[in-house]
Length: 334
Image 1: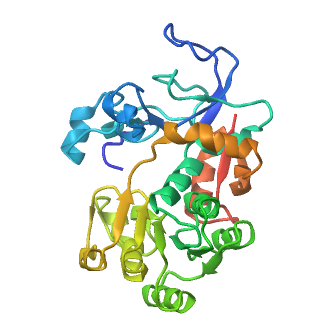
Image 2: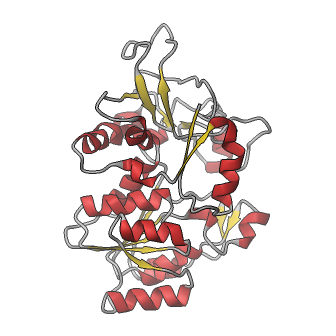
């Protein structure tokens, strides 16, 4: 990620206990157990008023640097780059939370930490990804990428009325989770020709109604990404543009860093595809998704495959990066 520095504290998916309060914090008290959204929003600017919290005008102290890279500044984000504020993330013993009256959400005693934790990012991100696909009752939804966000996009697609959900990946443990836990049909290859052929066969030549890119810049086969972070090869998006039905909906929760080489925009334009994307407007989703967990409509802890100590974080990163020991999602505790 451009504008990272040595010593930056990572981690944008965290929860904890309130141990100190700033003088202006009114809605929290010491001892409260809270989940913290990874987007930092002021709650008062035009974008926050429009519930587009990841576009907050006031929470990024490095807005000039962000403007140089993006054309405009977006909100500050925990554990990301200095372009997005340089805010220290949650893989630490303590975290300072700006705009604390508008970010953290209290966790009810009825829910465990593991049931609540993923409200901080991947459950809302998967849900917004599915919502951006404008899923209608009876739709067929195809999702590229069965990592943590992809798993929650599958769950969310069912909640929003999908009749069929087809998940595409090449990692066995992710596909097994998508198939056994999330009840998705799966395509166990990322070969472009095979994926297209299978989707046409499964949909009678029509293509999926809605397609979700839950992969982003680090798509399987993106060798160039390792050499040039700003020039990703859009393997997943290219497959989506070719496979999606005419006039279909494409949602992109997958993160892209800079330029995307070889994006087949002609396919998207000529097929009248509808594209929607963006960082998650976290604060918009916290209360309604917390309610879904409380009501038992979903238990987000299904995603956890490994539990390790904070001191073991380097080993956890290696396990995830190297796809070792069936690792899909690691939870770190003190």
